[in-house]
Length: 250
Image (cartoon, rainbow, N blue to C red):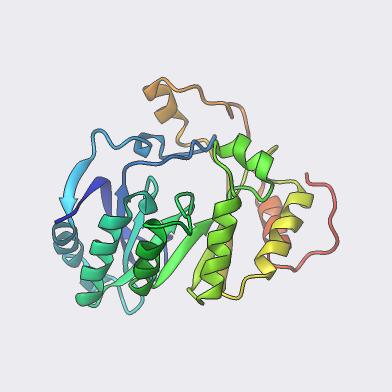
């Protein structure tokens, strides 16, 4: 039986998928996003190995609160980094009639084997994915996250091809992702997808900065302010195709 490396759980999540969700945060991530607020989930050490049934038994204690749309959401860290465990967890969850959702940056995706066959099977037991588009520009994406984005965009294309429902999330980081030109390029890409149910722009915040300090990791965005609500709404309008021609970001 496969065990997952679990960082923590949360009983009543209301912003990570439809309805009320039981949130499972896994440990381990190969991205090094400069604004990450879960930097303590990057490495698998200090994680608690748990089986799928142990987690589902814990989750079902709160099932009466989920409502008709609720269920479990696996976040992280990067859930797809533990695809064998995720496949077992979601297969057992569907057998219990539980709605399943993955909050992912898609970074581990590849069409090479053995990952791709496992991913195809995983999609059969996944109801929804919350997909982060960190940055549309490949060079800026690597500067921001330490990883390329070509396979991430390929995964989004594949999810559209199979009609798997997704929500798009984009963190608006002043000086990094808030340029109108980049936002319009992102919107152009999103328009090619046929499976997007929702687009969310999340404002950058520094609430996780203290974790970097505790772990002795330099925080390179120190002093960066959160974008205004007006700017967040402008960015959402662009990504949803509700804004005009490209211009210069604030």
